[in-house]
Image (cartoon, rainbow, N blue to C red; front, side):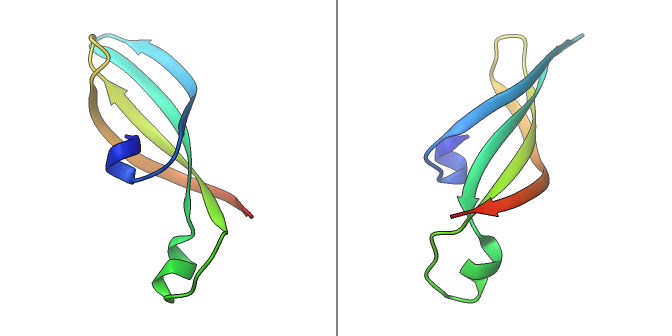
Length: 73
């Protein structure tokens, strides 16, 4: 996920075993997409939560952004 999202770090904050593998939530700090869309330089990062589906062998099968929490500088 780090490489795909081009972020420095991904922190797993929740995991649950399901019948066909695992479901997890990951916390990711990304550049503010709003400020970036304006073409402005920024140090502001959005704290985003991703839902991640993993296979039984812990390979990422899918992920999607669930939401955004307050930004940080």
